[in-house]
Length: 76
Image (cartoon, rainbow, N blue to C red; front, top):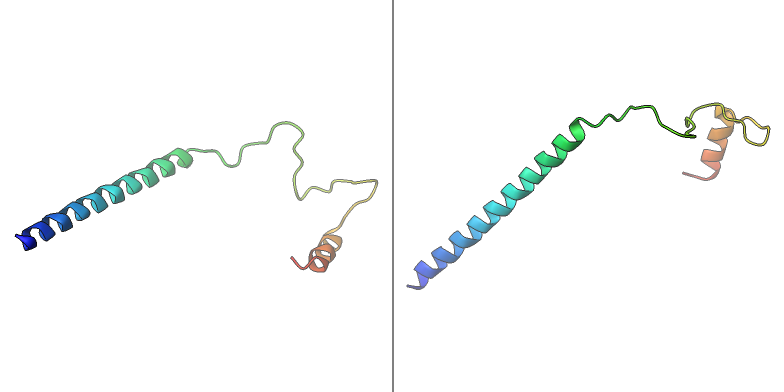
């Protein structure tokens, strides 16, 4: 009788594990389908500025060399 109860307990755990795994998989598929049609490259709206645009700050332009110097000075 004890072996039978252990087998039923293992079967319940296996079924719960399988259901949870399937729910997780279905959730991943759903999220993937949500973001598959998302247009990542649309034009920004409002006062957005391109990161690599030559934007003047306080009448001063920053070159790539200046940016690299700051990058290495901050050790990032």
